[in-house]
Length: 170
Image 1 (tube, rainbow, N blue to C red):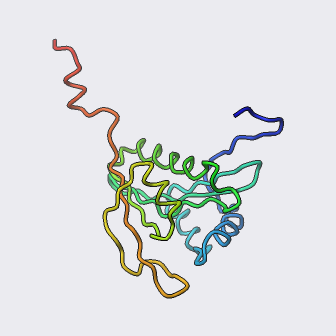
Image 2 (spheres, rainbow, N blue to C red):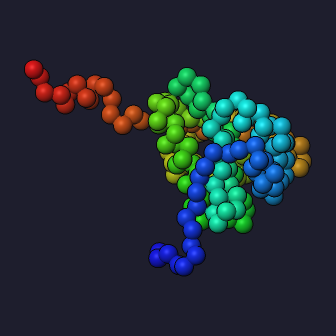
């Protein structure tokens, strides 16, 4: 695809407190039961990897990733419904995976609604596998909805065993 005059590549950057109005606007359009400002604020204060995706200076998506020891948890990954199906979700997910790799994370977990086919396909294409089900995890218009628990086992670029096998003997 060739660039057109005025085309601007989307940019991923750190989420800031002054982004929260725009984040909440996207969250409110994307979800029937959106996170509160306090939840996002708590994530920022906790030092989680909180990122936004901007296109033409408009916030069109965001993600939140927590890490502890050798594990990570994708807490939220959202693209404005008006900007879906353009690869932006995959771009945000790759950003999270790259960050996790840089920390030596061994596995990444997330929950997703079974009714969210688009998100499930995105995660499966990235290698996530279903680990289990959390019963009645999400609020839903008719009560509660289960969550699928997915996990991605991260593969190190090269294990130390492979390195030693490839090193010349002295």
